[in-house]
Amino acid sequence: MRFLIHKYRKQLKICIAMLLFGLLLALPVGQVCAETDVGNSAKSAEEAAAEPRTYVVSQDGTGDFTTIQACVDAASSGDMIYVLPGIYEESVEIFNKTISLIGWDRDTCIIKYNASRYAKAPLTFSAGDVENLTIYGYGGDIQREAYGLALAAMYDDGDSTVDEITQWQSKFSGYAVHIDSNYLYGKHARMKNCKIITNNNYCVGIGGRGESEVVLEQCELVSNGTGGCIYYHNTDEETVGGEARFTVRGCMLKNYKCPYVISIHSMSECNPVYLTFQNTQVRTVAYEARHVYNSTNMNIMFDIDTMEALENADALYTSGYSTSAHAKLITHYDAIKSHEYMKALVDNVSETVEAPQLGEGITYITAVDMDAYYLAQESRQDVKQRKRCEIDIFNKNQVTGNGWCGLNDIFLTPESYGNTLIEMNYPNIES
Image (cartoon, rainbow, N blue to C red; front, side, top):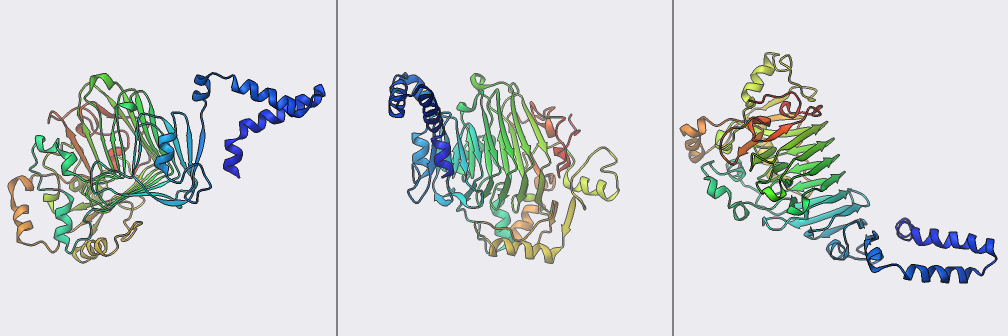
């Protein structure tokens, strides 16, 4: 009933107004309404097409459509789509239009799809608003038999060339949410009060465009796969370049497996991006095994080992760095607890995996059950030199820049505060 009233509110208002007007003039109500219909029919086609519409998606047939994609296909920019409770097994794609996709309730409105292939995500959109939905990208070979295999799945041995990295569409699985289109130029894309779960690549993969803003607000991101929670890159295209903004506000990032909770890549030195993190809690893992970390990581911030040493010496926060973690920023699991943790990842794979629980901050996993192959990887000179960082930084020109954590033309704003990771709070180290 709520949706019907909302949908036809304008028509109801017109009829009520005409009813009152007709009574004042002592005209038959039917005559007044008929004249109103004639006036409405005289509207130009352009005006009628420009008027925003409201649609309802319900699997039981009581709405306008039973699938979200069919509704999206019928909708135009400015329209609003309400999604009633249900599990929608769909790959929803919203191209070249700005619409609002609003769920009735985040816990009962679920979009899920097998995201094993990069080209298909549960939700792909370019601009507009998405609220009150759970988006789940399942699939992926995450049910591992051994701790060593689980580690191997996270990343390769770090020897990928730049040319190989550019072929990532065939190399990586899909995101749960993908925002990457030239249509984003000059527009906004916002997700609010959503739960985004991935068993594959990152929870959210974003390709920024100029004069745009992407916002994640009060969202919960849960990564059980080979990617972490957020991947962002700017554009190297001049025609859709310019300043862009990316804001993460009041979110929870849970990264159970990937060594990097966030990855940000700069593809250009002429399209600046301004990052803002506010009141965002992070629960992520780090690994004693170095071979799971990228040799291409250009992060100039403290590595995890240095942060832990400063924290233990009570020098981290007195140096001007801050964290929202109530206890220690970095917690170690011994060999037994590490083994239990990795086994739990295997045994508790489900759509809403929350076990094992991680505390706020960085949980250090000890290298256990490592066979001869992985021990050999750890003994390599290039592996020994790799930094353990929870944020992966990469510049296209492979030269460290003067932006956030060593990025080219991507900067942290002074409005960044109240976050778990010290890199996400202003001020931070910039070369």
